[in-house]
Length: 153
Image (cartoon, rainbow, N blue to C red; front, side):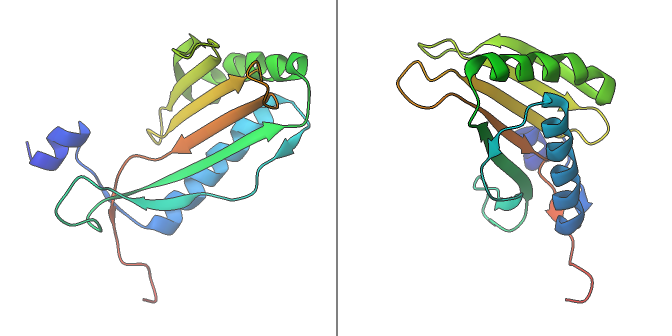
């Protein structure tokens, strides 16, 4: 087993970053659909991030999409998290955690893995008990991969 596969727990595949970006964007969009909540979402899309654990920072990358949903009250956000937890398994995700996080506020957290892509989901319901606006925060991210040269470059 190579040092990298020991570090990651798997052997990263060679993939086109653009294809992985599309994959993560589609998964992230599906997560939003599963919430059944109409609120405001933060701007931005999936971004490519280099692995900072090796000698060559361009050797391995992953794609991460972080966003939040806000502008609705906690009862609606709670219904959204319940809907998400209920629908994830039917959409190819395995929920590995659905419960309170380790923060003082004990925010609800859902952690899941998409079986087909091995992408990860981290969802957290921040109820605003600390005076901030209540929101749902999300991070959808791919496994690390070795970037293939993009066609036309």
